[in-house]
Image (cartoon, rainbow, N blue to C red; front, side, top):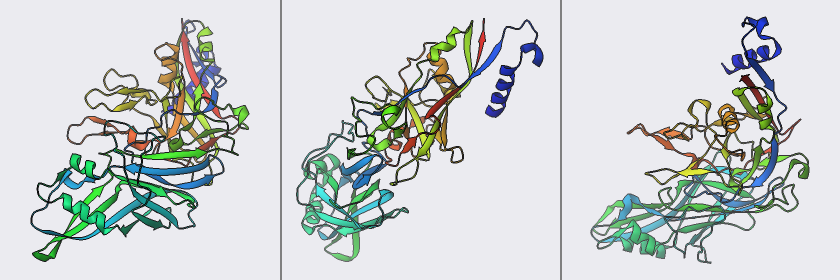
Length: 447
């Protein structure tokens, strides 16, 4: 349908109304333009929240495009079933640490060291942590895990100190321990990369856990197990540090954006570090110079991709969001849940509805043939022209899935899922071509 609309629009734009069957007195004109100025810059987003995400980043990688990346992960552990209580005389057997990953970024040819440390600082359940956050931990690691990275993912376990295993089992005796009490006794863990690591792992939140084995002293044939896992139900986040020295992004900071002229024509997007391309439409008001009222038939924003970095492929899916003058992604706090609802670019059919008006997010796939991401900005441009929305700009960042809102199978209500699906990729995109970005608009004006 979109293709038909575009074709009809082109025909109308090239012919007089009387030539295509419209009455000569009909005051109508359908026009096309792809020459509106799109102002682009590479910016550093403020406060990149990755708390309770689907991925926890751990590792190091020297990226020739985006800079040297170093990542640690921190998190509370969730007690299986919310509490831990045993009956009878339980005997400790062993304590294992498990880590599972489904994402790697960087050099996959070398064995990588991951150290597990015990936190010495409480994590705040009411706080949303960012990539700049940190937490203190014991200098001496509890254990070291060695992983050989694979693009297919993997997992590994290692035995933890018996002293810690016995300490955890002791908590279950008598009246047992609740989640709140457990966090006072064991604040959580930190995952720290080895100094010589060359890969960043994306550990799956929920597949990082401690598994405690024990048995009853009167029955040695039956073995029990209790898990203590990192979970999106509890605070967990990644600290990500970047050194951009020697790259085109060396001058980038929260207070300093980079124009295309400062980066050799290139624009950049890397979700997990908060590097993104911001677009503004400074000449959009020129459309109002036409006589009459403006109606946008279709508007498409096209991003031309030059490539990525050696660390990973071009992101498969991108989304866009409104931003403010302080380089923060705009959001609303949802009544009832208190969740942040990002103001993502909406699909045309669902934009700006009175109820749940941000529940129609737009996410587009990478077109490998044309090497573009193409967003439908029809309703957004119309909203700017009518003054319904301020012209503060849009930013883009990768997402793991185009389905950022899912339906609750029980209530049928929409569940906004952007928070766990964004800011969790290090593979980014470099934009360039004949132009970085182009805005194509078909519009109509009437008296």
